[in-house]
Figure (spheres, helix red, strand yellow):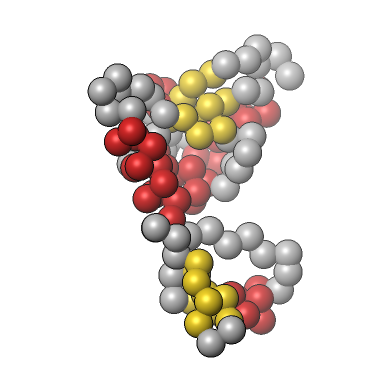
Length: 110
């Protein structure tokens, strides 16, 4: 399911006009659909249900806390590949992320 749709030649995300968002917040503006994000994550998790892996999202790809929090609340882990990513999460939200949802794949010396 995708929540980005055109209505009368205007682009909307979850029934919110992107044109209005740009007027209110300016550009550049990063807009995410919670419903699209979670829908895709749940489909991926369902596809691998038999083996029940920890599916992780790369903090390097997007370190937006609201984005990461939404995924973690649905059971996603977080892939941390640098000390910078780890410090970023620790300082910005140390009480939210649990260690069992973090997958550290790289030396944290950087």
